[in-house]
Image 1 (cartoon, helix red, strand yellow):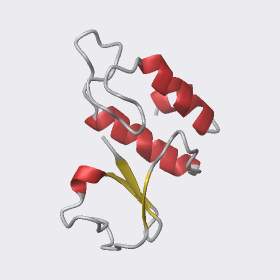
Image 2 (image 1 turned 30 degrees about the vertical axis):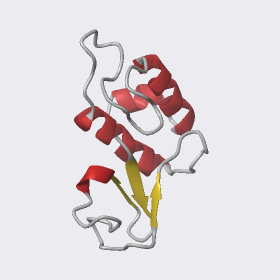
Image 3 (image 1 turned 135 degrees about the vertical axis):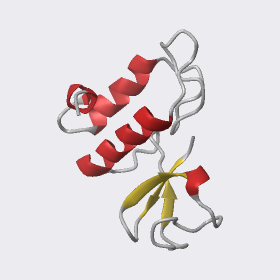
Length: 103
């Protein structure tokens, strides 16, 4: 699942929520969108990391073993082990992944 950030309204959303391709579903902007790229190091505020965590928690399907993801999320391929994703959140969020898990 690719996650898009709108610089115009400061919102994150799954790319699949764009009802008009290339346009933000929140504000309609079309020239202010950026796909979140973990490897490139897209800078995100703690509020946006919290939003990403909520998307991760609400939309993501886990594999049968409940230890990995069943579909791609951000730059993480299907089959990525959950601790790998949690480590990224831990580094990206100033309060750490433990705080996100207990929100």
